[in-house]
Amino acid sequence: MDTIISKSPEETFLAGKTFAARLRSGDVVALCGDLGAGKTQFTKGLVSAFGGDPSEVSSPTFTLVNEYRDGTLPVFHFDLYRLEDNRELPQMGWFDYLEEEGVSVVEWADKFEEALPKGTIFVRFDIRDGDERLLRIEL
Ligand SMILES: Nc1ncnc2c1ncn2[C@@H]1O[C@H](COP(=O)(O)OP(=O)(O)O)[C@@H](O)[C@H]1O
Ligand SMILES: [Mg+2]
Image 1 (cartoon, rainbow, N blue to C red):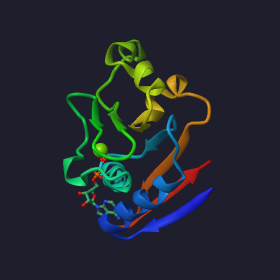
Image 2 (cartoon, rainbow, N blue to C red):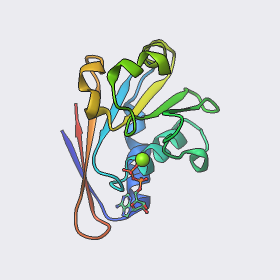
Image 3 (cartoon, rainbow, N blue to C red):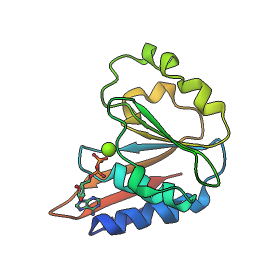
Image 4 (cartoon, protein in one colour):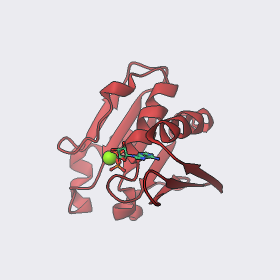
């Protein structure tokens, strides 16, 4: 397990960018933590590592999934915050995305842990005082 203390949004961005180096096509990354913990900020860094534009990354709140395909490897960015029932997952193409060439990053993945494939990498975010965040990468 890797533990990272981030003291700013920039540090969380960098953590995501560094973390991306260990990812391969087909990997699924579950981002867990409260609203404002930095999950989307981390995803921006991750997308930038593959050559995508981080300014295009925002929580896919209404669409549930955003695709970033401009980089060397596509990144599928899910946010399951508003999803109420795991029976909606097939409709959003969840299982098709997981089989595609690319990396899947899932905010609020812990709501539907049973739908995550074996080998999913968990990154847990805890809000500390002020701008401090504790990031734990569980491999
Ligand atoms: N160390 C930090 N890491 C990440 N975000 C931070 C940090 N300190 C403050 N922030 C702020 O917290 C918010 C994190 O937002 P976001 O990444 O969208 O969180 P989430 O996707 O987990 O809801 C941003 O407004 C960001 O500026
Ligand atoms: Mg978010």
